[in-house]
Image (cartoon, rainbow, N blue to C red; front, side):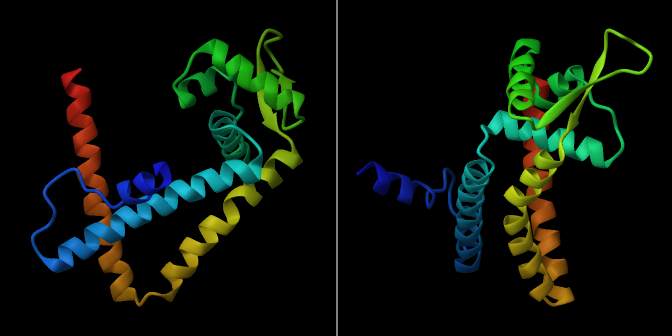
Length: 172
């Protein structure tokens, strides 16, 4: 029974549905995409063998490394929007698993940076590669016109959701 509820919940829209059949079809497709993204997120965590928070931290550190940025635990506090204690635990777990190294700041003995190991970089790449490749493959199969229409629709949806979040933030 719980699986049945879960299966049908993804089909549920918590607002009045679009009036046209085409709009309803698009709405259903978006809900399916959200569920597919949720499944892929879980698949990624399983493949990486990490918690959501640990994998998020590792992704930020890998991206920072690739961008040539030195990231500290203080940076992770901001990026993960969490406490110093939580970041300390995340860093300790990732160091213990040999996925990151603490590197001493060259001029400040009290400070250190966090650098992902080669294993960490490979793990992040492997965890996300199939998902991202599947998306790119579909995009590449579209005509330029269809890709433009898709980009326009997704941008409008994203803008609408960002505006909703910004409006909520202003009321707090």
